[in-house]
Length: 202
Image (tube, rainbow, N blue to C red; front, side, top):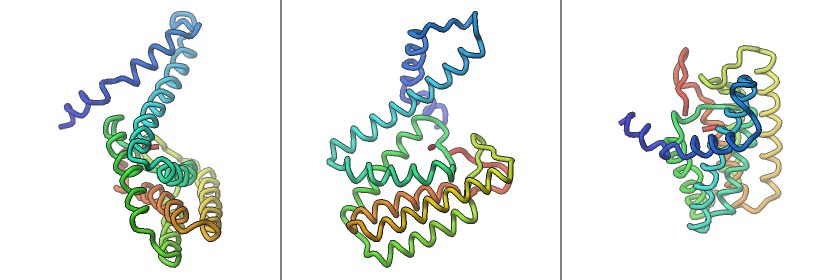
């Protein structure tokens, strides 16, 4: 199954795209290998995220979910920025999981809007989890500096409180989307194992 996933890893389209982009830049591997590696890594990250974004929002447009997906995703990213959390093992898994999360969840929220007291309870759970687990340390994001951890925890706490206050003044559907995007990002900070962490998107 793992070999099949690797084979279907979007046919390595993002890798071919980043290689093409780097090839167009006036950088020669032989002359400055360190710079070439940094630029290649940056191009890989850019193309990887661009490809996933195009797929997710292309589907959101097709199913007429663009705005609800956008609100949900922005809330998720605002928390994710400082909370970190688990990532998918590869691009193929990431796209499949992202479609389920960023297309299906906003669709369900649009169908069943929860009352404000319920989403405020959800928000309390989010803040509690963030206070305990954020920032979510993974194999890709190893944070050993305790001071940096405290700074990130403080920033994500402030971001979470601001998002909660904003929800009070917004239409109920938007408040639901913000609270749920925040809760999803929060859940991904929960550690699966005590010592070794699995990688599940940033």
